[in-house]
Image (spheres, rainbow, N blue to C red):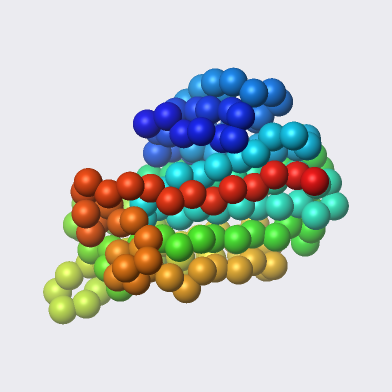
Length: 182
């Protein structure tokens, strides 16, 4: 699926590849974008996956992430921090993180085969079924990195009725999260 980033575009792949937006145009395949200059608008499109922004207040760099189960499992948050640290000398104490509405442990039923070690902290067993709480996994990842300044939306895309949910309706639309640097 092609995702528009204001004046940039990329192809979403449900992985951990993060692309740098240096100018308008097609960026390639990925699930994240780095904004480090003014004049570009980033947009993450999701329907149950986690829209995340990491913002380094000191270096004035933002990373927008499309973080579904595979992206979280493959460490897209760790990858984003690695880029911030290596390319911008970011400090975890300078980073603010926001996670928007997404499917939550109340509704995200999964099979045993998807429960890897990387996701185990988010496993919920309820009435003989397995549910996955990706927010618990993301909070653990933030803690491992040292990012403690974060906000997480309380809304579940599946049961709140306020957002598109692929789990609820496979023929749904998408909602987005925008970011730009001033």
